[in-house]
Length: 353
Image (cartoon, rainbow, N blue to C red; front, side, top):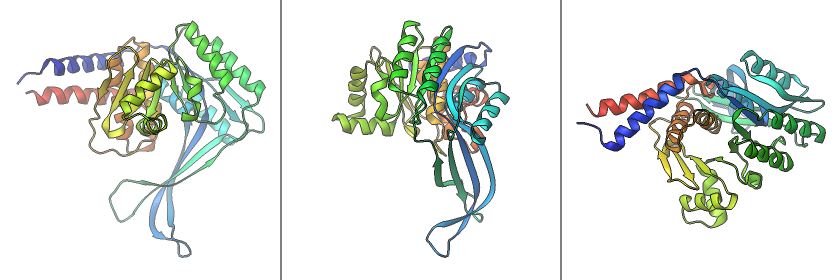
């Protein structure tokens, strides 16, 4: 039994994506946003505390990794893209460790400002399982160490000036806003305007409270929960209607909605809506999901791919993260993405034999 025209187009598009991923062509991506450290503590939670109804974690291992915008930078580097990261860390152990880790992986760090007496954000997650059972780890607790004060004006102004100067020759600009003070109203307006003048497409992962900063942005990333919250807020009857209204209100070109097991949907101002269904049955976790999608979109833009191809690539990137069993796989890698796209191609071929 042969493929339908739609299946044949999907097969050809996925095959072309695989070819693009295997090429060694590089491109420059400017990235600005909050930089933080992620810490993972693994162990067994076999018992409850005798004085309170809380689990007792017996630690077996722990690891540290860069997070937020630094996490995106690592993904870009893995994809063969040149990441120019702009952000802020404190003059503490965590901040210096982030810079050292990024430099060891070949990520450009000249745009990371070290601010005196500032605390670097550290997010610690405790992941536990039962020792007697063969089952996946579950998140037991997360606690954060973070700075509430805004980034000093002098550091912020210098950061944005450097980022604007670095836009020349870039294939895309990514703004990663985790609400830690790097993305500001004034800075975002200047940077996004400069990108628009230079024909550099902007990809933004905004806080819902910071949507006013994203007017005229090319690509916006939401998780499905965010779109649902906005649907209720603006009184839309469906997610599709909410997406259309948001695109009109903020003059976005594309709104990319990540829905986990439901896949990826791209709503566009001037094109048909595109949906790529998730091919996974067992979803393990979601840490790094938006970061992976941002990396995939940046790669797509660097290759001049269309919206349909971008949706398929972003969906495959999300599948890599959703199916990750180890914390070191929470960062999108080129090899994992090639493998995932290849699986989709293979499944199409096998199903039609």
